[in-house]
Length: 626
Ligand SMILES: Cc1ncc(C[n+]2csc(CCOP(=O)(O)OP(=O)(O)O)c2C)c(N)n1
Ligand SMILES: [Mg+2]
Image (cartoon, rainbow, N blue to C red; front, side, top):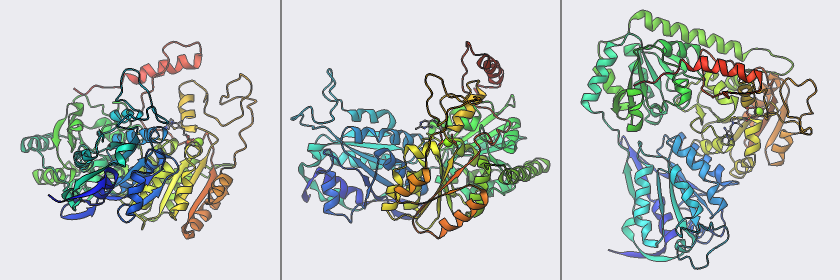
């Protein structure tokens, strides 16, 4: 076996650059590049390897390690998990900054390879700068914090260990069922150490991404259940989009007449105006989907994790004998709600279900009811897009203006605050990849790096980031990354002087928006909504902030001005930030739905006592599906 003398870091980088994936006979290079922030834990090892062959993995400089992972996650999602980015960090704080990103990747089931530096494997100079010292364990470093949030973790303690670690990493990253964050902690001495690397390890390698077929008995049980159902409903999750099964879903719906509610990750599974599309389902759902969910006797979950937002904290499905058919690549999800477990790729399963149901359809009245509610819901969207609220516009009007200005293939990106819930309901999605809300972790700060990742994965598309002032202030520095990468990105920054989604939640729980407004502190007095004499709001100029980071930034006061600025942003090749202030109290309502957030059982505050009574009443609708 021929070998080549390489450092462990050089071997890893060369290996990663040679990996491809293939699905349905189409082959792609898997890694599109490497984000990194260097420190003593990676500058001389991984950094040297990247510099020596810059053609292998394109290097992107990040501002914050958490944001690098967000960008990588967004990239992988945009590539339907058939592509990923590497993120390298130093040891200590650079590494732990990536832990949040790792959790986000794993929860959203999206592949990202993290290579944090680690303390000396040889333990010679211990404790090195930023080393955690655990009195009872010599083998623990801060990188052990990655274990629970990674789908695969290894620490490369000897150079030749790159071989099994890299292969295992690829197995997990390219597995539709197991994918998530993969962490290879890389001690700084090992990175720089040379070994005789087998050339075979560095050869081009293609990982076949399977389309798992369902077990025939499970499929037959699913077909029987669907045939027997009077009021079936599909819950379309992200798995449909990642499996590129949207055409198969459409064929299934058109043949059977079964309507569809969409989760956050599944939004775009059908175009918004398809007569079977009832839109968003669950806590942030439409009245159309939520009414169908409440009355469904069979829920066919496809590629969904059934998060509490999707199930409205298990209050969404109220038929006493409702049953579930769960199609998912991950067995974990197929077993939820006591469902019929169809462990399979969404595309294969939909094709087989359509075939198995040939000649079967729901009755015409049921089909017509879905079509009517699709239209009724769209009229509600049109109303909210054109509220004409004054003096400040409502957030729904901002969404309307952005949607009107967007082409069907443009991508809207968001993650936290009131925006993802409002977008889930109101965004008119016309392309399966046109809607990108990170709502598995709903991580503030994801928005701008998420936009960067989407744009890196799909440079031909226009990307619009919708971000609240709170989320913006968590990660504004990533505008610099977008500028540096010469990306075209439009950021619409919705300013309501604070954490308004939580403010609304707080008010609904009797807590008066405590701790959610951006106002000066005033002695010991808490800042509350409804205060007759509130302290002044903070003198923030977020447009000036964005401009100082290299963006073209404007503040607009009206929806008409917003429309003009959106048109200008379309002509600007760089980063545009449009700041628009909205009325904090003019939110989009929830539609026949609920979310379980427990209220204090005993309290001196009468508003909280009332909220608790309401809470106990509402919780009675919560069900266990056994
Ligand atoms: C990193 C992180 N911290 C805290 C939260 C909890 N949280 C959810 S939304 C929100 C406020 C977001 O503020 P902003 O971006 O201004 O949006 P708005 O609520 O005003 O719509 C907070 C604190 C979160 N989702 N992510
Ligand atoms: Mg806000």
